[in-house]
Image (tube, rainbow, N blue to C red; front, side):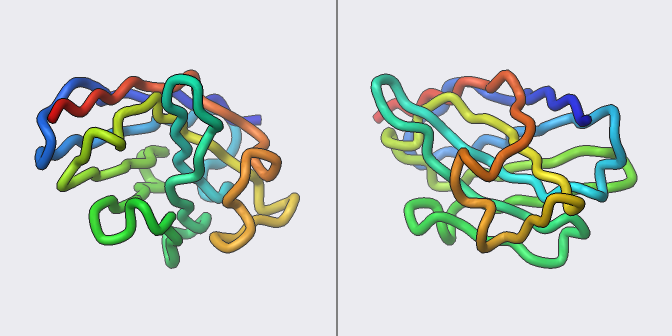
Length: 129
């Protein structure tokens, strides 16, 4: 089992940048594929991107490709989301998510909420125009 805690959310103007972090504890962090999801008010939870357990590959939703970058530091048990060129529609609650390699995970398949085993509590991002 892994426990996830997000941080770094806040308010930013459109065109600005923000960096979110997710601290993991419990099980071996490098055994998990990690992802970011987001959910705006009255909206479904939306996949943002996934990074493989060893950090070798990542996959992104079209809506954020080229603007957002996921990275991880397995030595420090942390996951990051660098968000650049932010748009008002990027405003949402952002969630860190994990799925164990023991239950099979990949950057291609870990793109829906159903594939997630563990969730963080979320961190709020607001983007003003």
